[in-house]
Amino acid sequence: MTSSAKRATGVKSAPAKKYRFSFLREVVAELRKAHWPTKQEALRLSLLVLIVCAAVGGILGALDYGFFRLFADLILGG
Image 1 (tube, rainbow, N blue to C red):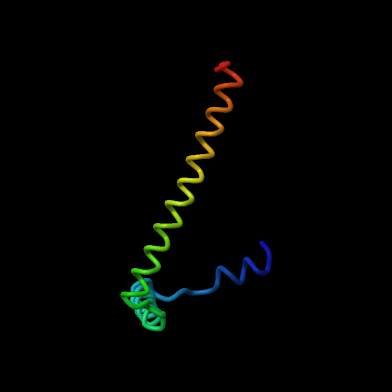
Image 2: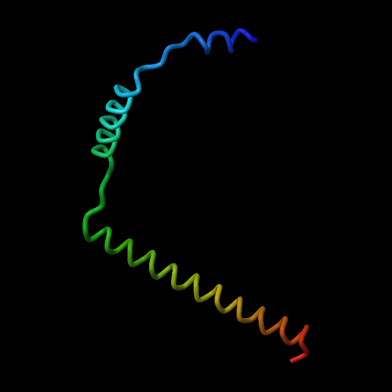
């Protein structure tokens, strides 16, 4: 066994219950620090995401249809 492995086995960890509560407390503290968007910002950004998704979906759908027609004409002969 290496020296680092020997040291790792001798380290004691905190009790699981205490760790859970401190973890949750730290999560709440970090969420309070976060910048939360206003209702107007959230609505505007959500609409932007929907518009981008529709545009990308339309482009991919058109490409898919184009490739389908191309291969159908080449392989199936019309």
